[in-house]
Image (cartoon, rainbow, N blue to C red; front, side, top):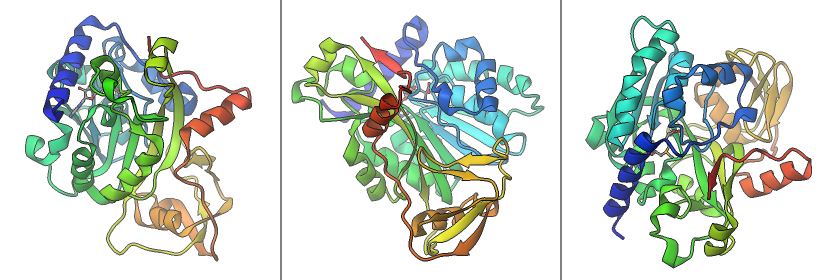
Length: 349
Ligand SMILES: C[S@@+](CC[C@H](N)C(=O)[O-])C[C@H]1O[C@@H](n2cnc3c(N)ncnc32)[C@H](O)[C@@H]1O
């Protein structure tokens, strides 16, 4: 099936879902801070009835930032970020589905009033993520942070979407991505099956390919921030030849050209709002305030050349290894083995 036909079907599916409200995802509560959980609880029920994300990707240290949410749906993440960026920041949501864009616009005033903003710091636009510059008029190097939640798995031309995101992200900017990943390729006969495609299964990237596609787009290697399972019925799992699916969150960066520094012992200053005692970087690394931690050259470069540069003290060290590109399937198995299974993010029954 042609790419544009698939995208047209996705748009039709989500346009109808807005009206029927018979599907909703679970928020990855265990990953959120207390403050973030409180903000999510305050979102309008009409927004959360239409929350279809693969885990809420909430970046930290965002006050005053200009953020874009690609595939913003009913606006849940945009509304949370609106509070966190504050009156000096701005959040734009874009989505291809008109009914979702309408519903997010409908609750913009409600959320801005709730956060006590005298001027709205939010806008929503309808169009295609493949054409961020053409459809929305965004310029190159426009956004400090780009977030996206459960969208790439629905896009047939992922290279185009990633190129579009990379180009509109500022140098030194962060791409904070939550999406669905498969443990193996879907069988050919189900590749165009709408149920499987619309719910993020057959269009999802197979796990090891993901890191490569990010690297080809120009980003640093991804650091995994969360993972949660997708609960697929036995009947569908059999059709998909035993494939398993997970939602996973990653942070990655567009480093400024020529940015480089060697490995370093970095000491977190405790100055990120909501993260006074510690700052969780990914599933393997948490910086404790005032405690030096050795990181390799890529991570030291990221911390030194992005919005985190004033959050750490740096001291040169010789080589060290920092984990990244973690495997979400293995991570979930490890959690289960420790008796802490992560609740599923959504069901396909
Ligand atoms: C699974 S939903 C997630 C929505 C939202 N991020 C959330 O957390 O509720 C996927 C969204 O991606 C949008 N979408 C799919 N393909 C798109 C494209 N090519 N450009 C823009 N949005 C797209 C759909 O309209 C839908 O709102």
